[in-house]
Length: 110
Length: 111
Image 1 (tube, chains in turn green, red):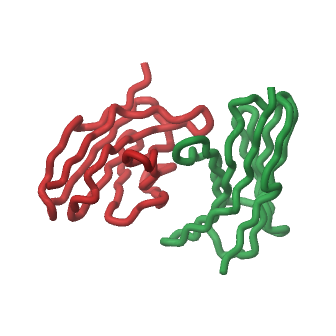
Image 2 (spheres, each protein chain N blue to C red):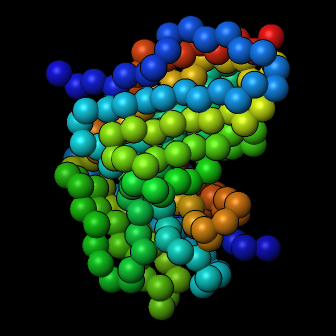
């Protein structure tokens, strides 16, 4: 069974802090790794990573993939209360497989 | 002004019919999404697309397919409509981080 583990499971920080969320996996035959933010409704797509070592950045969020060490991180700087959500990573195998990570629940305290 | 336009507001189709729901956005967004919304179940992602001709299955893709031939247009297809596909369908587009802009919704009834 393909395994995608996110850590930490839950994280509570103060507004303004920087957080790093981790997504580790055990398989290598995937096309891309995707990050999502899920609030009360459906997940919102954040990043798609296909190449190792190339950072993707959007505002206060950034993400990078390390195919050698089999993990990806999602970084959020200067956190705001609106960043509170569940963050999910997912492997895309290019077929019907949907392999989501366990998720990290991030809570930002004002 | 940001605009996501869905082709129909209300639609009634018969069981077994092929149904096309069209969505057009004028913001040059790369990401487009199709959701369905049902009472008590919230918004559920059916499919999304992060580039032309690219598509990803969401949480409930069964019974649906999608087409993204041009950046501005994302179509949801019900190959053979069934009564359990009666729902409100919402299209959204997004530049990635700043949330999604939703269309006005299509209420589909399959009889």
